[in-house]
Image (tube, rainbow, N blue to C red; front, side, top):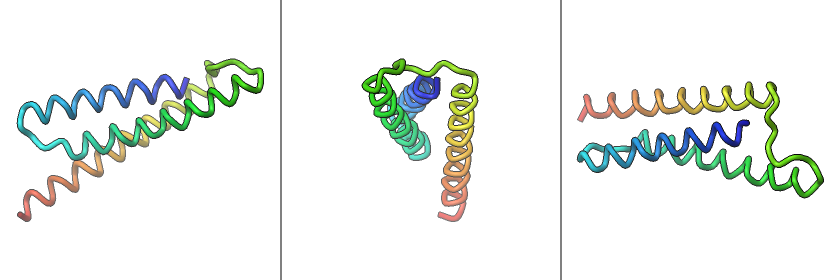
Length: 94
């Protein structure tokens, strides 16, 4: 489940970053957060393939895995909030 959640988060943030760039706005925090989620999705993809090779299922759809995915998404959103606050602080001082 965390694999699916991080893939979805990476796609959402990548789309938001692309839309911001098309509108002529900087997409620093959005782009960085998209890369963080993409890295997490890649990590879990390797874990899923490893599980499959050991004879387990490809995806873990348990409640514990869903909670882990929610925690990872929450941490990514917290990172985005901190990066966005830093961008705003730098814009005010410049």
